Length: 385
Image 1 (cartoon, rainbow, N blue to C red):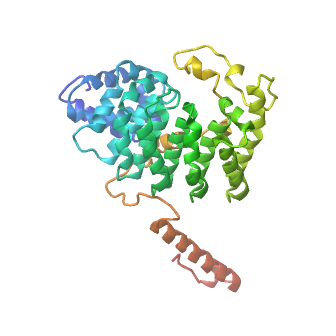
Image 2 (spheres, rainbow, N blue to C red):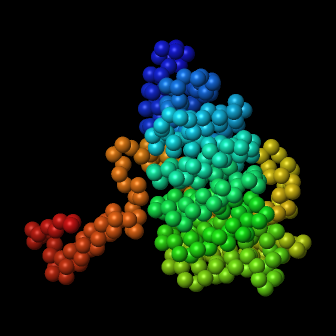
Image 3 (tube, rainbow, N blue to C red):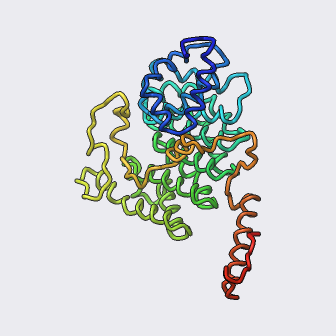
C-alpha cells in the first residue's frame, strides 16, 4: 500500500495507529522490513504526509537508536527541522515528536550533532512555547546537541536556558534546562563560569528533580581534570562550586541528593591524583588516560580527550531516558486537545495544592475513624473529600 500513491496516506495513518499499541508493535513492523520504505518517503514533498511521517519516525528512533545512522546519511534532520520551523501552525504533539527525533539523532552521535549545530538558533525560540512538554524537549535537543561536540557560539542559547531554569513554572522543564546547561558546561573549557550562574536555581529550587540535575551538572564540572588545579587556589569559581555543594550536602532535605553530593566530594581528591600523573586508586574515576584513546567516528576530538572524565552511572543524568520512555509508551505524555493541566502534580501549583489538601483531609478522616474504632462492620463509610 505504501507504493500506491492513492493509498499511501491511509496506509501511513494505519501504521501510526498500530504504533500506538506500544514498542512491541513497532518492533514487529521493523521486522517485516518497512524501514526502507519510510526512509524513502522522507524525500517526498507531499505536505499531507509530514504529520504521519513525523509520528512514525519518532516511534522508530525512540525504539531503535541504530536508525539514526541511516537517517543522518540521507540528511533526514532537515526534513524534521523544516516541519518544526515551517510557516504552518503545528500542534503541541507534532512539535514534541519533531524535537524528539532531533534529540534522538544527536544522542551520542557526533555527525548528527555537527549537522544540527548550524540550526541551533531555530531551536531557541521553542523554549518560549506555551506547552511545558514542548519547552522540555527543546531543552533536551540543545543538551543532546552539545553532548560530544564543542560549539563556541552558544551565548543566546545559554542565556535562554538560564532564564528557563530560573523561572519556568514546570519542574520537569526547569530540570531539562539545567540538564542542557550541565551538558554545555562539561563541553566547554569555560564551563565553570556558566555553572556558577546556576547556583541560585540549584540551591533554592523547590523541586528535588531540578536540584538533582544541578548536582549532576556540577559533577561534570568539578570532577573534570582540567578544573582540578584551581582547587589549590584560595579563591575561584571551582572553589565556589565546592562551597555550594557543601551547603547542599548540609541543608538539602532530600536524602538521595545529599548522597550524590557526598559521592562527588569524596571523589574530588581522587581525580586530583589522577590529573597529577599519579596512579589512581581502585575507587577512582576512570579518565581518558585509562581508556582506549582510539579516535573513532563518534569519539571526542583529540584535544578534548585529555580533559574528559567518565562519570559513574550514579552521576549521569537519567532525564532524557525518562522523557523518551514516557513518549514511547502508549500512555506517553503527549498533549491532547483536552489537556488543561500543563504542570502535572506540582505541589506549588493550584491543582497540586488542591490534591495535597484532599490527601490531608482523607488522612484526617481515616485517623478519626481509627481513633473511634469504626470499621467495615459498623456499616459506616467515609467518602474521600
